[in-house]
Length: 73
Image (cartoon, rainbow, N blue to C red; front, top):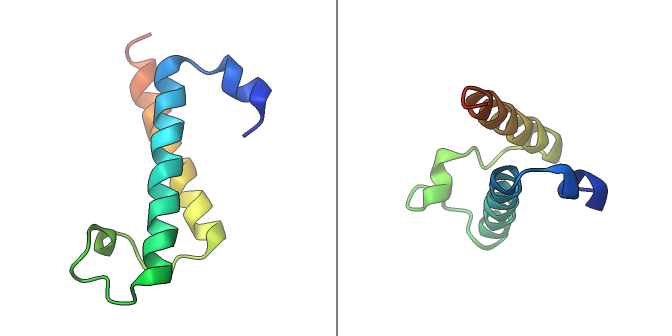
């Protein structure tokens, strides 16, 4: 994410973006270390996501957050 976009985001948007980034990196790390996802929190996500699918999923989450936040503007 570019520094300009980051600076234009509200603190709540920055926090949401950071949380999504952390979840995404933890998910990728878990995929590298564990091939058995049944007993982990990662089981909620498909272990077969490609990076493009993951990016699409994360974009949908961000749009949902944005729509939710607009209700309070």
